[in-house]
Structures are given as C-alpha cells and as structure tokens.
Length: 278
Image (cartoon, rainbow, N blue to C red; front, side, top):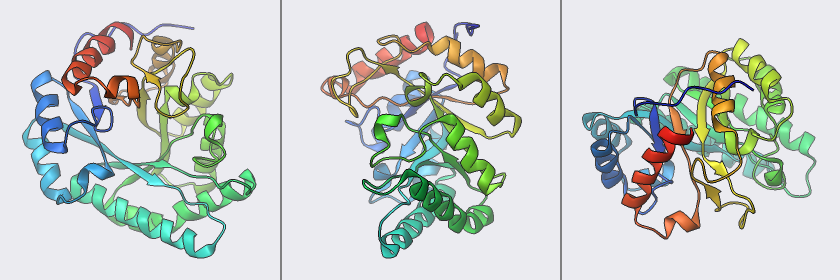
C-alpha cells in the first residue's frame, strides 16, 4: 500500500467539538483558532441554547471553516410513528446545518435490535429520501457514515463502504454521499475497490481520523489518537487522495482516557499526532 507524504501544516486540520468535549462551543472555537486549526465540525448538542446562524458567524469570524454538522440519522424503528419522528428530527438537523453554514450533515444511520438489517437498510434509504427535498432546497449534503460491524445491532445497519455505496446508488442523488471514517473502515478487505467506486461517483464528502486501540477497552469511548493504535493512517489517506479527495482531515476521538485530561493538553497532542502519524 502506498503511503501518503507527511502533513506539514494545519491547513486541512478539522476537529470535532466532541473530541474536546470539556469545552463549550465558544471556547472550542477560540482555542482551535489560537492553535492554527482550520476547521470545525459541530456536534448538534453544542448548538443547544444557541442560534445556529450566530454560531456560524462566530466560527467564521475566528477564521475557521464550518466543515459539517454531526449528526443526523437513526432512521429505523419498529413503529411508523418513531420513523416519522426521526425524519422530522433529520429535517431540523438540515435546517440547523443551513443556518450554521455547514455544507453537510453526517448521518449515523441507525439500526433496531431484533429487526433484520435488510429492513433497517430499507428504512434508512426511505428516511433519507424523505428529507431530500428539504436538503435540496437548502443545498445541504447528506453524508452516510458506515459504522464498524460491532455497531450493527443498534447504531447502524450500514457497516461497510460497499453498503454505503449501495445506499447512495439506491438514492441516486448528488447531495447524498459518504463520510469516510478510518475507525470504521480500516479493516475492510474491499477498501481500495470501494473507495474507487465512491470516488468515481464523487461521493466522498468527509474524511474522519483517529486510531484503533489494542486492546480496545470500550466499544464506544476508547478510540486512540492517531499513532496510538494499529490503523495504517497514511496508507488509507493515500488511497482516498489517489482517488481525488482533497478535503479537510477531521479528528474525531471518543476517549474517556483523553477526556479525563485537560482539553488543552489533548489539543496539543492532536496537533503533534496529526503531523507525525496522519
């Protein structure tokens, strides 16, 4: 596997607000800007009690790019009422993204324990289709994020890059694409082929990085900072860049271990790991 060249600056570095979750949105924006970070992906809980339009203005005034809004999704449900509520919630996410000035909403698509993955996948595409007219009117992209198979029970029935490509094919809309997260996809033996398939359709909308800890102590909140684990980060970046991706490289780390430390210490560690290992 070809290796990407080391990164030399922070012009493509984006950080998710959940990564430094000890900071409120305003402090995160100020600290990121001071550190030379270029972009921010805002998680929806960081907009609670805030005007999305004003928050977007504040982010841009600090010199940061609003990369995306995270997250929408969770479409499948056993009851029709719950599926309709999920669609309405996703419409609110699209409206918030537009007000914030975020070009896309990241979709963690959802699943239901006891319901077949086939049915959940149908409900996912149906749910996305129901929100597309609004997304189209507001020019907001929808990025399906395939999740690692360990989350197939209740977080996402979209578990491989191939299944994300299949969903995009079924919807066949230029505003529907993929959020490519190395944590969820690094193990996939079809990664190169499916990345090329996604790139040919111009549907790689986002690229997320962290690392896979060995052993992993928690299925959700034990991700590693780049270089702490076993993912071939430069090899995977080479694959997506050979297929045309030149967007932000988004650091998304869920880690109780890191969250127990001061966010400023984590921010400095992110900068170092980004240059040395990403």
